[in-house]
Image (cartoon, rainbow, N blue to C red):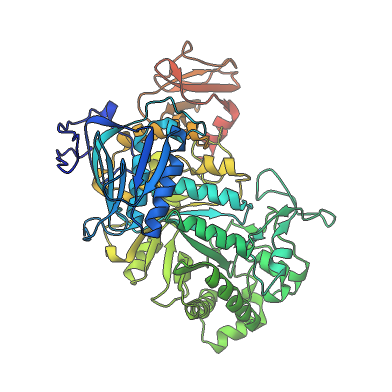
Length: 638
């Protein structure tokens, strides 16, 4: 529910005096929902000549310039002024700190005569601008100039500030390479929804994406592989005569440009160099970093199978993709890599991976067994712990804080190590109770590479995460001290994501859910109200030509069996108010076909179930064709 309070803004001319509670159908659709929000009568009409009053602070001026750019579709003329008496839109830094707002909070007031955004710091002004832009009609997102349109903004008062300081999205640019312009586009999109942290996964078995001048082969060799398309993980191994034509990397100048671009949008970039596992690209570049002699024959992974996951975690390695913890050259290598990374990224943390480190090659290696004996290490997890502690010292020596995935807890790390919990919430809970700083990033709610709907229509991955499940993300468990939970983030791994359009499809709308879970007070979250706003932002994305997944409209399919083992089919929807129409006769259903009202039994010789969802007279879901055999297999798999 929206908080409705009458606030009289007496310092405005032409004040909107009458506030009123908005029915659900006419509520303003802001994501993430603000802390306090009141809609008033009337609206502000954007004049032909707009004066944006800014502070002289360089960051505040940048916010004013950003707003001017984002209002380009209005076709109005804009002037940025520093005069306190001028301005249709005021961006004001408070002379006395408002303790309620903190660094990123803001107050937004719109009346018929003026728009005012107030904040303690420029970041708050920026987030106030994001809310203001969402109050404009959806056409504000258009690339066309619509000068003839009457651009109106409803009168409102907003008080807003984030629940968590760490509001992140992880972008895997290692499995598939995304250009500098792609990353900038990603930053633009996330900033609109008040994310402030971009985690770049820069290295993995499939590519090394950052220039390290001390080790040029990392990008000369490690950034390139055989180009393959299909289901990643099931590709045939590269043949000796297949050329390494796919890849790319960011030069150090590229990185500096991205860091500045992000900083201009109040986004920090967290670099990740994933070690000791996931290091095949580095090992192919410099085989002496491996414990395994055969490493000199390895190639950068193109998507062929290199792990056996049948025994669970950690997987059984079919090739040794780990840096050797018993090799002093590895620590010399890491020292030089971290030195260069630390100089490029001003953010206080460096993420050093630590996940999914296979140890079956370590278990047979004489040098590692001698290392374990000499240091009284009882098992291979403690060997990794030895590696992580040495690595943390390197990171700290560069003036940075050390962060890793939750596996780093298994061998023991220093209390100063920060933990990113991905294997559910349990790793984060354990870490917080041990007084580590924690970022919650669980597969349960926040893995954007997972399917958003049924495998019948989604690109197949091994798990599903629907929008309503992502919206249940709660980064702060009741059982831990809140001061150790820095916040949370969602992760987009890109094994199956080949291009930027598909990256957008996988990110949105689930990132809306993560944004609201990290910004909005816990008690204000409401699924039905949230989804009503999501639909309005679909319209805004259509204007902006940003791709998103409509999977939430598609039917959910489950199976059962009668006592005599006949297949039964159950259909449901993720959101309310939808009807499902279906056929078994291979024709394409619309609303004149049978409507689903209860369990279905497939006719004896039927081969295909086709379904589509409608809202009233309008189709909203996609046409799904589901072979009956696959439904029978689904039942057998239970």
